[in-house]
Amino acid sequence: MNRIEKSEETFKQLFGNGMPGAYTTDPDFQDILSRFIFGEVFYQGKLDDKQRELITLVVLVTNQTLPQLKAHAHAALNVGLTPVEIKEAIYHCAPYLGFPKTLNAIAEINEVFQSRNIELPLESQKQVEEENRLDKGLAVQVEIFGDIIEKNRGNVPYNQKHIQDYLSAFCFGDIYTRGGLDLKTRELLTLCIVSSLGGCESQVKAHVQGNLNVGNDKDIMITAITHCLPYIGFPRTLNALSCVNEIIPE
Image 1 (cartoon, rainbow, N blue to C red):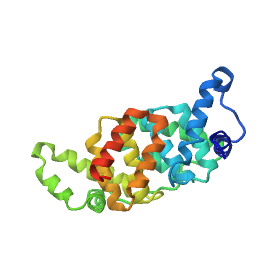
Image 2 (cartoon, rainbow, N blue to C red; image 1 turned 135 degrees about the vertical axis):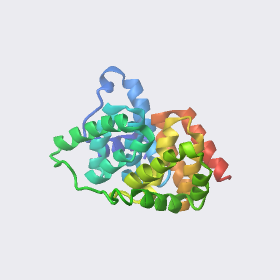
Image 3 (cartoon, rainbow, N blue to C red; image 1 turned 90 degrees about the horizontal axis):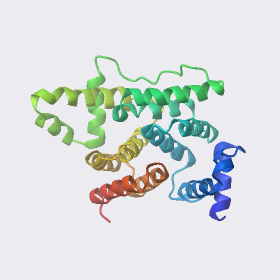
Image 4 (cartoon, rainbow, N blue to C red; image 1 turned 30 degrees about the horizontal axis):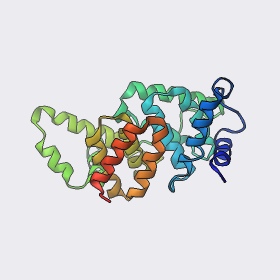
């Protein structure tokens, strides 16, 4: 298949037979968009459609491009992602984007679920309790990043130690330990989120190493960052790839 045929097939699989409204007003631009995203980028590398849609969701949340988020929530269900997997991907954004932007995204996802008669709330995926969230979060951090975590915590000034505790208990305790998505998926989504934010190169490098440590190789990371490209543009994509190449030289 050529890229036009690929784009048509992929678009139909994701969104059904409906055509974007932009074809009425901006057909040239919509052709460029569809053929690049769905005829080229979607076929680069070895991610499956479920992984691609999870990445698309978190990048759209990062960008706060909520109309497109709603469309891709439907697409995510269409390719077989479960409501729990979708909702967990959205929750996973909170430590990196903050609560307001994550709540904006949750509202859009809930509208999609309700339109498709998916009962809310979904089954809880909570895996920690108040008294163990810090310890369990630290355990996940060490699993991802190794012994450097204890060294880093020990080097933090006393008046900033609470930030490291929040990172361990909230980001890795409350969020990373949740069910619905495995550790490799969560760490790959984190790489895509921090790459999409821009200006977070030190965190991108850390999560490149984290991805390696949990079993996501360089090819998977390059494919994931490539998949982000149509949504975040070339500058942030090239910056993220530079981080990958710095940590994992060719």
